[in-house]
Length: 151
Image (cartoon, rainbow, N blue to C red):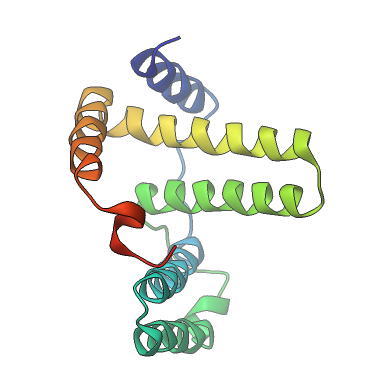
């Protein structure tokens, strides 16, 4: 199966299974926002910017104290944010399986991650995403080892 077909099939299945008929709560949106600061901290650390990494971790920590994070009655968030958070949950499950030495579980969660990425790509447009991948590959081919970062 080629990438375009995989994207289309994944999105059709997710749509059929009602994943696009409901939006996640703002709780999910806020967790995604916190996660983005933690991911930035990792990126700062890769660039040997320890102060930037610490700053982003501190921002995430403060955001976790927000009373809004703990409310159950929050309205819906944007559906794309929810799908990004679902991708992260699949990666977290892959990490947990890998940490336990569960190769089969790891591969299953990695497949779930890829399927969710394909679903989101189908929502955005398979041709657009494939084009963006090709363009990014060209950029990455010209970058130095480790893309100039520490790992």
